[in-house]
Image 1 (tube, rainbow, N blue to C red):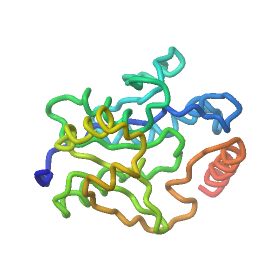
Image 2 (image 1 turned 30 degrees about the horizontal axis):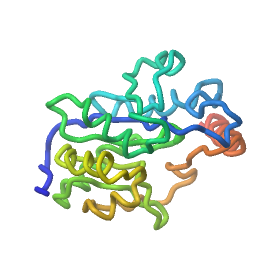
Image 3 (image 1 turned 60 degrees about the horizontal axis):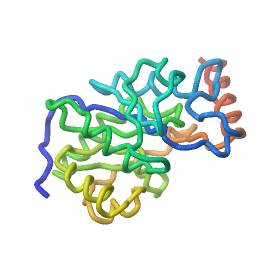
Image 4 (image 1 turned 90 degrees about the horizontal axis):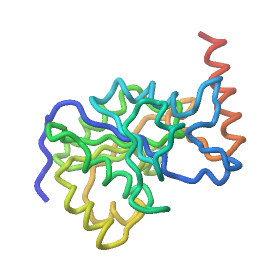
Length: 210
């Protein structure tokens, strides 16, 4: 695979919201209320200024998610996994976009400079992707990818049946961006009702200390 270009302008972005939110009691995670706003809106507010176009990867399109004003990119089939969502978004990217930023819909504290830092990491390594590592653990849903991987991604999803990132990271060389520790964690993600409550407390403390 050819090395990725060092500079290609602002990336596109996709918010991964295709999961079934089983531990949220049936409530779509993206719509869960956090500080009087949907969780997804917190993520949009943080990632939208970092990209030139923004997609929403969903299991299937819905009016509720359409209200956020993003182009919904549905999974090709149920339980397709995040790789399929990444593929669908990359296939929809405008021709002048060369990079795709991935973030999950359940990370309300994601860094405001995430795209810039990942782009810089990928450019310095001359590799077609960069993945965040936080506290020595890879966070592949916080990553950026060059469109030069599109054919390999299509093969992984359509031919090889890959669904998650673990296998894909074994066949595509990427750079690793070691993110410094912070409190709260910028990669805090909401997986259940308790973590939603915890996120609300973090936001409340932030407001009171400003």
